[in-house]
Length: 194
Ligand code: HEM
Ligand code: HEM
Image 1 (cartoon, rainbow, N blue to C red):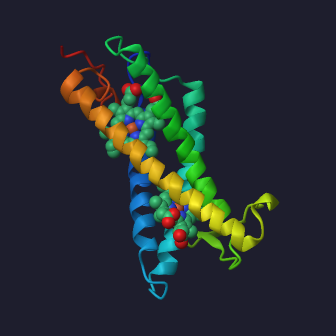
Image 2 (image 1 turned 90 degrees about the vertical axis):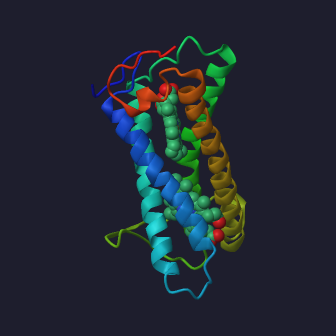
């Protein structure tokens, strides 16, 4: 039951999904909260460090999750879904995976470009090196501004896509009444209820 089957998710995919869902929603909330604080707020520095630590944890988990997905294909979508619905579901999932990589990478690049050179100390334990920032983005201040904009736009794109994703999951459960929601919440083989 660790691996996916053709009709259901295995334990590893389910644990990855829900751990990362909680982590990413917490990161969005924390990101929006901390950027609304006054620059003089004493909690600003620890909250930014926490956001960076959780964000890089999400990046590491996203890489492991994608590797697991490559060697362990996802269950097939139910035949009751139209071709367009299936294409939309695949595109939506691909978009979520792309954002799970691109958002933390843009954040890491942003703090690497900052002229302040503030270190990223993961959970107060060890310092993560800065990434090389592409010269095409201009001097440090200009590159930081561009990457801040990119991180913010990607963050809002994630909020919209997750909103659609959750709406689709609820539609499957309450309107279509198929197995799509149940197979991400339970290891028991789900049966169609209509
Ligand atoms: C999946 C992972 C992540 C998510 C969902 C996320 C989300 C967000 C959101 C929604 C904001 C507030 C909007 C904004 O002004 O940009 C934000 C801000 C920020 N994030 Fe992230 N983030 C993630 C990972 C990271 C990582 C890995 C770093 C750095 C190592 C980082 C550094 C920052 C910084 C420095 C800000 C504040 C930008 C400012 O002062 O305007 N983030 N993040
Ligand atoms: C919090 C509410 C959420 C609910 C109710 C939910 C529900 C689901 C369900 C039911 C599936 C299975 C779809 C299928 O059988 O094909 C799924 C898959 C998926 N979810 Fe979520 N999800 C949530 C949050 C998130 C978040 C925050 C992310 C990431 C940003 C995410 C990313 C994904 C991805 C990438 C898949 C495809 C898994 C694969 O087959 O590789 N989900 N979700």
